[in-house]
Amino acid sequence: MRRPDPHNMADTPGGGDGDGDVSVVTKTRPKTARPPLYKVLLLNDDYTPMEFVVMVLEKFFQIGHSHAVEIMLTVHKKGLAVVGVFSHEIAETKVAQVMDFARRHQHPLQCTMEKEE
Ligand code: TYC
Image 1 (spheres, rainbow, N blue to C red):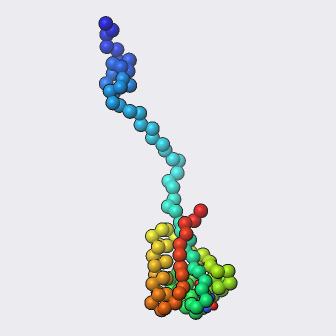
Image 2: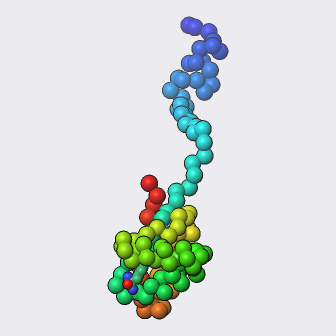
């Protein structure tokens, strides 16, 4: 019969002797991940007045008049444009505000969001 030996795992409480303990592997990352960002897009249509789109850009995105006209014309010519990049919650709020404002004015303007690569 062998004497208990504290240097032998099988004789030590919590040792690797099949008493139910499991190894825990903890992964660490050197940096904190940034929250994902979302592009808010404005889509072209044939009916929403240009001045209304400019007003939307000024009112909900704090874009100055000249730049708002440029963005509106980009959407008009290219079909869509990114009007801002935000956290998920802010992007959702902007989309909801624009869609609600357009609906209340009976314009078919569409605004959507898309996760940034
Ligand atoms: N194409 C519209 C027109 O000719 C103008 C417009 C621009 C509509 C941008 C939507 O997101 C838009 N009246």
